[in-house]
Length: 414
Image 1 (cartoon, rainbow, N blue to C red):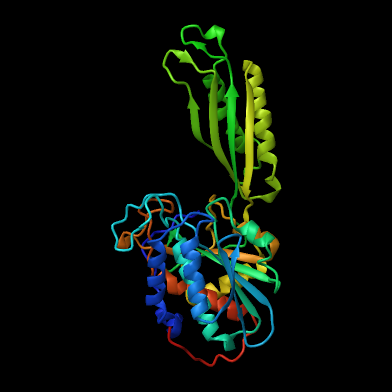
Image 2: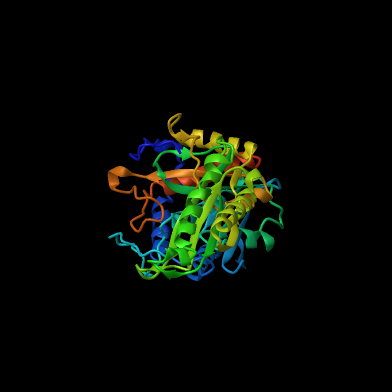
């Protein structure tokens, strides 16, 4: 990703309609209520109940208990037309929050450290706004409140339970509040935005013995160390240098005494890549490399390899739509960041495999307020000004994608 200063860009508030500006205090309240009550994947009972209660209060049709805690809200426009889905994730992380704020997590060891509380608040604000302004669009909007993005993944089970059907979704969009970009910017690009996520564990089996008599052993640590080095050649020497990839060893465990040669070692790590054509390549090459290193030393191995999420691939037409909408809301050209790829992963990818769509980043960092800690950090927080910007972006995407009708205004109180 291109490095971008985290001081906020200028924001032209006249580009955010007054009805959405008026929602800002509610958006903040909802976000902070959710932030205080973080829940892990498929455990979002309080979050789901909160969302369902709001939808019920506003008279918005919705279905609950999809993939356990997921919800879909269905908002019909003025006349029949296309169906656009908006996706927001709801789950938190197993992190102890270190922020000293009035809305700090009340659930020990759990924290909204990735902005999903903000995503849920933005989706709620969008649902409310659209339900009060159905005359501004035709067709149907389905707002998907998804559990378990951080793991084990809620998008796929929601799709399997029919969330994209009845009515069938024509396209989908979603956003991620992003502390790698400053407030007042939008990161949007066609094609690969986020990487495939694959994880592995490898056990190297040697033969232990006395540290002073290595000739009587097969040193699993020596073998595993060579495996760590050899695996780096997959990216460095075995894939096209124009195709990005990562092989990271995050854990290395072996031995229990300084004078004992360990008989086994365990490695674990993650693989990331953008190009879907590399699906299966890393797993195959890891088997070949590990087997070769082990054979040369007389060791054996077991490799447990799992594919979690495919890469997030944005569709050209829907990306162009989102970009044009962003340009109407954000100060351009500096506020639109096309080179915003990250090796982070997202199960939004499953929705994008099922229907055309676009996932984009909404800048939320503000260095001037000390709101620039990275995602998954125990002091992560973001500038809540981004919440109303997110609602404005979603509303304009709906009005652009779905056949626009009269823009006569009207509003209701919460």
